[in-house]
Image (cartoon, rainbow, N blue to C red):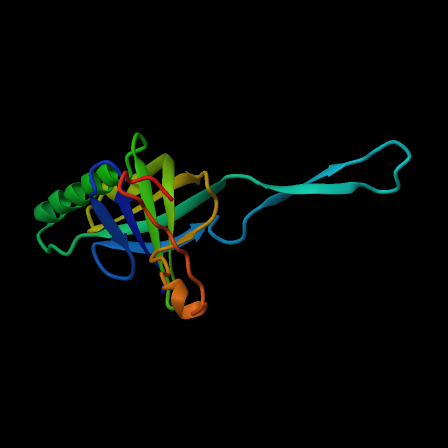
Length: 177
């Protein structure tokens, strides 16, 4: 099951969207493959074109979810829904940068520097009868487009190339000799 952790870059507040209350992750759009555009040039009298590079644009992602109150009393349930709603709005503030961690079965990735552009938007029909469930969605732009590893792999170069040496000596004046 895919789980998302959205972290506000300014305040550090976060929400988990996953398979347990209070925030459920329902679906996503835009986190699949990246769209690319081939940059080509055609010279006079040339047959075909020459490929120069590939341009990858920013990524627009849309997340659909629901927030669920676990309180039984209808009045307290409505208050809990409003509290969870305020928390989600404060984390996904369009004025702040958001970091989105993606936790899958066999991988952990992160979109850093995500900008929320729409939402979170809530389904108005859910306010008529407080049943403890409120559907929401939000859209965000990922300028860097690629998901980064959540934890970086660090290794000692001497383990890979044991005979590799780099000698650096300093004299008394702290200048490189």
